[in-house]
Length: 297
Image (cartoon, rainbow, N blue to C red; front, top):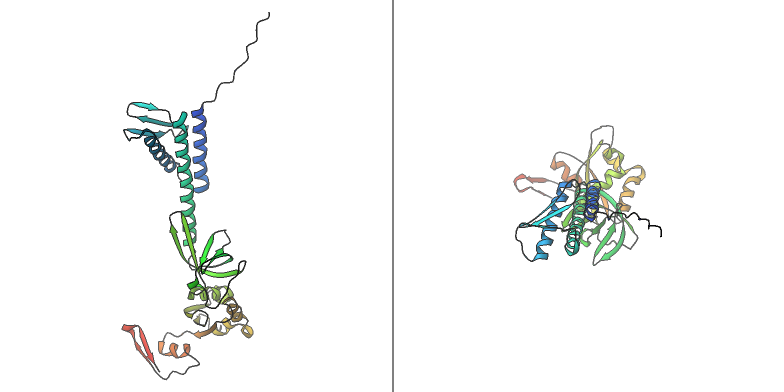
């Protein structure tokens, strides 16, 4: 009989090397997508694996865990004994610990990134779509798919919202709670009126007209004091627009029921206060700077 031909056997892949390569890829992904330093990730995974091994063995005696930064292989030692965290039950525990740690870091980084991004946009005018209601709060989907809350107290009195409605508001506050970021909107804040003026009136946007002050009772009346750096530009007339076209647009965004009075700014409060209270007549104004109050009749 002819001798049997020997078949070539494929060597079994080094499971530790493969696991190490997978770990390196995951660390690289965190660095590229979330801008997390590799050393930060390695240190966090080492702590997570060490805690997992301590829990597995039921004690905390001299357990040291390190990751080879070149090949991603996890090395563990308990006292004088070398442990192989890539094999058997211990391997599954270590792998799960590393996975959970990376998921946690993803969530934390996404949360921090979202909070930082929206914190820089506080006071900015945004538009979103009402998604649902939670009690008196309207949950609004923003353009970047973030969710924001429009609380009842920050809504314009008398307004009613429905799912699918488009709403404009200003970013009032950004709160971070654990891994959640809460973006709070407002339509009742005076800055909402200020941002609408900046958006609708080009002379304010380019700096020719300046908004000096805004006072507001949401849903009822707002008073906006403006001034112009160009003597040829009528600051009040520019804000009102041809036949009231500009101010009408702003009033419509405010729900149509809020009156807006535009006042020409004056550095003298004794001139500004009577002008801001028109059509009421003011005979005399007394100022009390220390009390930050004025009395008039």
